Image (cartoon, rainbow, N blue to C red):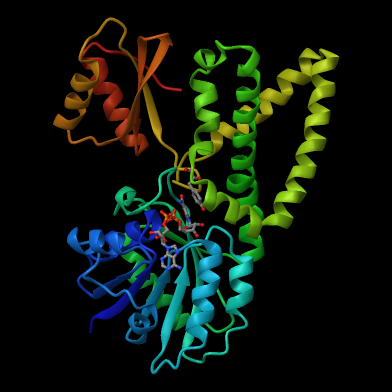
Length: 365
Ligand SMILES: NC(=O)C1=CN([C@@H]2O[C@H](COP(=O)(O)OP(=O)(O)OC[C@H]3O[C@@H](n4cnc5c(N)ncnc54)[C@H](O)[C@@H]3O)[C@@H](O)[C@H]2O)C=CC1
Ligand SMILES: O=C(O)C(=O)Cc1ccc(O)cc1
């Protein structure tokens, strides 16, 4: 028997989930979005089997509803569903980056036909919208599930079965635990990245050359500041208590750090940096977690015209897929190093050997 799945919100996350699930021949996927062009794009590109501009009507025949809209909209759609005269049982899930406010509403739903299981696929991108959606976005990523009091094990199994094509790794957490941990490793770093960019921007008012000095390190640590501002505001709003607590801790940490810098204590400074390095080096070694861990190779391409094409071709010949490729400049307009990101350690090692055989100078970091 085919399961009817409604994906409400066909942006980066909803579109990516739909793209993965639609390949599964046990489901019929119906897409709903406030944006008509998005729905048309989804149908035309086979991301959903059909679209329905009427949410209330679409969910009437659904076995599973995936709410992939901004957090505040997720809550609104949950309340709409709660007030619908549903004729059969439906599993409702979401994808919101914050879980407590969602689960609070979920646990107070009155509609006996709704089993709510919160969800958070922990991978994404700085892009938004259906055009950025990818079927493999959640492959090997952690997919947090937070069942509500109105869900059962049987419903949980049904949801996992429907989401199986994402090839993600399911983890059960309670909402508060989830929000605390994601605040530390995802939400708070985002705030700091944006703050670092503001600091650089302020300094560039008096130091016009400063942006030219913003090398790889600055680009790496501030990459997430290029993400969707409206989405992150929504995340900070819904995880406000945890964000405020972390900010307080951070301010204290910065004061300690200032004392350390002012003291010129070499030994303590090395220990501070070494401890951070040891913990950082151990992160993302085996799994693709909240921060997708790419396996990078740095290829020296000074004085080599057409280097990107030849490196890409070399790897493509061996069916090694590149997740990202970037030229790092050593001086204004002068290319120096090609950063090639691979999805797995195995791909990184094979690429390393292949490039070495072909006389490229490479390093891993
Ligand atoms: N972007 C990311 O990296 C990640 C985002 N999330 C969560 O996913 C959710 C969606 O984010 P994205 O897909 O990145 O955003 P997006 O902006 O790419 O897509 C949102 C989609 O929802 C539609 N939409 C908005 N309000 C709607 C409504 N009331 N009814 C129907 N459609 C509506 C929009 O037209 C758009 O197509 C957010 O709750 C976010 O917290 C979770 C993991 C990663
Ligand atoms: O791009 C990154 O580094 C991310 O961290 C993506 C991301 C954004 C929001 C989430 O709720 C989960 C993952």
